[in-house]
Image (cartoon, rainbow, N blue to C red; front, side, top):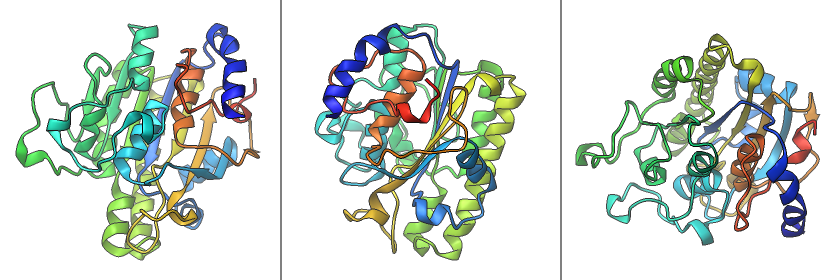
Length: 300
């Protein structure tokens, strides 16, 4: 049914005008949606309440950070993107399928794209010519990552601090921002632990800084934000095929988004995030995409 719907929608997707000028995808690594609803996250919860939201979206299996984020940012499941590892292995090279950054660049060569992350393993998603900025606690060029940085972890506040000046100066067309703290605290102290609840709060404060930057850049009214996660978690891990580990939040807020809308669709997948971002920017979806835009979240 998903394939049939996608095929029927393709002519419409290819001819529609852009629905927004800027798309920001923000991932809260390890963001179990049940715990998010209990956490002190006023910014996240405000956007969920004001926009369109689902607390029962799903990630891929296995529900690991790099494979899941690759699905999110390529629009395809692991069988197609084939990144089944979860650490930085430079010799394995870049993802072999197009990313949403590359697809946007192909359709709109002058569009600005950026990726700000807290884990250096996102380097596997930096295909040549697709990102204007790859930043993991600082901007990186195409040269190899020093061996001393192959386990680099950058906290959310530093990720946000790196993103702020770029947002103000470049007003990106497509920007991905990743906050790792929740996952780190979950592995160390447990999902739902006091330490992790503090990490949820810190990541929400970082979200507030991003929102302030978008507003200061003068693009808040022409931006659409997609807030989600790569996986949930329980106890001190997130690899089991159970709802606490595989369910993720999926929030849309901003230009073109339905107001105060609980998304009824119960089959939102993480690769639908990439499809939605491209649809919003009027980039045709490749036929091989597993993802499809979450149309119910928007006014069209």
